[in-house]
Length: 142
Image (tube, rainbow, N blue to C red; front, top):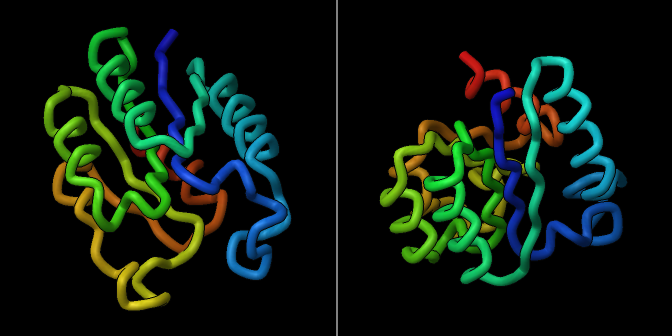
């Protein structure tokens, strides 16, 4: 069975509570259950993590590179815009990563328009809510 990691960064544990007008009313648990069910449909084990800590996210990325994970769906949250450490962790593994954002980061505040992560990912999906995660999984399976 293929393994895909779903990795969510800072503040995504607050989905459903934090800025529901931007991120919606569904929770992180809702997202993880949805992705596990979709993964099961496609014969994929979804391994889900969320952390507010940059170091823990880096550890998970590095572990994915060594543990047979075949792809990572990553929402780095605010780390998108300044974490060269996460960027370097992704560049240091041979696992494809797709960057996902629930909101359209390019239509928000100017500081959100640049992703330092994007240049080392397979692709970036923004502004499609939870559907973006589903599309990332399907892309990794192709």
